[in-house]
Image (cartoon, rainbow, N blue to C red):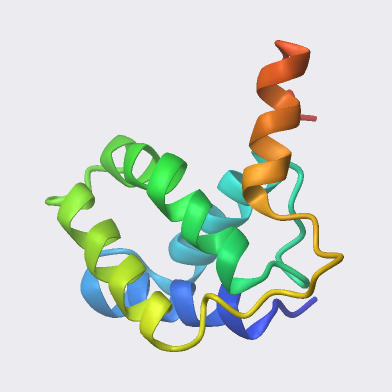
Length: 111
C-alpha cells in the first residue's frame, strides 16, 4: 500500500533528518494518522499540517528524536510552502476531525 504524496514526503523527510529508518519513519507517521482516523493513502497537506502541529512532535519525542519540536516546525513551514493550503471545499479537514473528537469527548483507540 502506498501513501499520498504528502505522506510520502513527510516520511522521507523524517528518514533524512533523523536517525529513523524508512520503516520506523513510515510506521510512526502511520500510527499518528491512524490515531486520528486519517488514511495515509489520502491524507492531504492541510490535514498533515494539523497532525504535525498537534501530534507528531510527541510521537517523535517518544522515539527519542532530538529537537522534535523544531523538526516539526521546519516540516510545517516547508509543507505550507509546497501547497498545503490547497484543499477541496468538501474536504473533511483535520481541524474538523479534531473538533468532532473534542466534542465527543472521546479519542479513537488503537485496534
